[in-house]
Image (cartoon, rainbow, N blue to C red):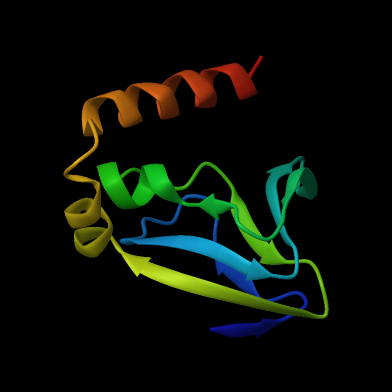
Length: 106
């Protein structure tokens, strides 16, 4: 999936059933603070996002927006992603995500 700069992929507070993989380009993860966007990080090739929302049905903690002139993404459905994780310990993955999320808030 190709998206242009400025395209909102996932909005803060939105629930999504997709996990996204950045194939090329850059994606900003941002939150609104006092009605202004604050960029938390910039995701690059090979990074994934919106995992918590897709796996646990939680609203997204932040918005994801295309930051480069063209971004190529792979959209992976939650059921397909989980099917391929069955060889892994899904509870350990969730625990790692929770720890990572709490660490980012400090």
